[in-house]
Length: 113
Length: 402
Image (cartoon, rainbow over all chains, first blue to last red):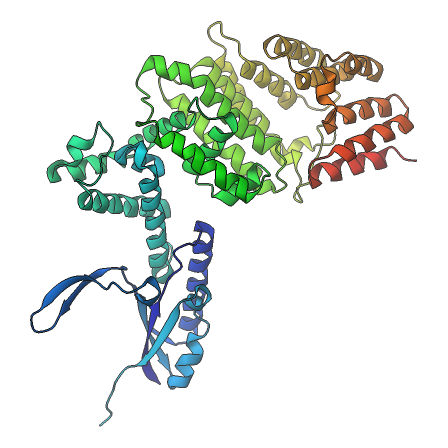
């Protein structure tokens, strides 16, 4: 088993309260399912949609990220899967895909010595 | 929540208040997606909205003007947080809802517009839910609500609930709006029984809020609340699980909510002070006779007829006359009922009302003329406005046999 992060991007800003509530229920069900199957190492956190970026040697501080809503990372989780392909399979049922968002699946670097 | 935030931001910033609520809700659901729904979601939401309000106020301190009375306190960081905190206490929230309720009943708005605003702002009904409640299209409501909100935002400040003269002058309009809201739930054409029960529930909640205000606890306000309790008590028997309509004749009286009946009678008692006798008093009294009768046959119809006589002097409408005629028929037999039905003044205004024809049909059936009854029920069926009514009249036609 290897560790991966799921980075969730994008959100539906025009959803009605009922739709949002349904989306939330889907997330709860999805996490529950991952957890029961032993794939959820850490559920992670949702992130605020803005913050501050500190950049370069000059340490310039800017408000941001000013990416478009669909590109903003909205949250992350730590996932356990056999390999990348398995992790990708797990991500395919993520509710964010239904509202036009994306999941970025990234293996966590480990060097076995 | 919108009511509280509008109190802080000022009524001209109604849209800002709604954005803040939407945003707070959005964030709440994102966090709950990960962490699960907390034990007390509404308190959580209130806290989120409060924090968002503080953010907005700090960021846009000079860019906007807020509620005139509060601006001074909102401009200083020393008083900002305590003032906002104060606004979110339970008593302040109730006060804000009352202000908003009175503000929604703006004289420039039609009654239906007032009710739609109350549903949208104070009861948290979305456009689609308001449309479902009024059995109208999404687009129609989508046009009407923003127009009504513009009127509200143009009124510069929220209604002052502490000014006795203004309060008493606006109170009848507010009572009327709540009465319509309740009736929409009780008699309305929305087939979904959940929507209907919720409308009644919201009307009762807001009516109770009026009773908590020293200027609002008038005999007519008590009568209105009594009327709602007594009618709501019968709602479980009026509609069955599939949303099918049951007439008073066929209702299972054991399903009536006796606790609500008790509460209604208590409120009716409280309303009987002073010399004011309004339509709500009479309607509540009629409802109380029904609610305390053990059966249709053992109902005190003489009492009900005399109450309808009283109602005719306050509000002489063809619908009241129709109900009176039905009561007379119950008291004196079907032939008398038919005579009364024929004597209704302005009866052409009832020509399109299905229950007018159904009333004739019921009496014809009781008088042993099923053929005539069949014809009259068929007219009612043709005029029915929704599946619930259609189903009901089809059933009555079957009862006529062939």
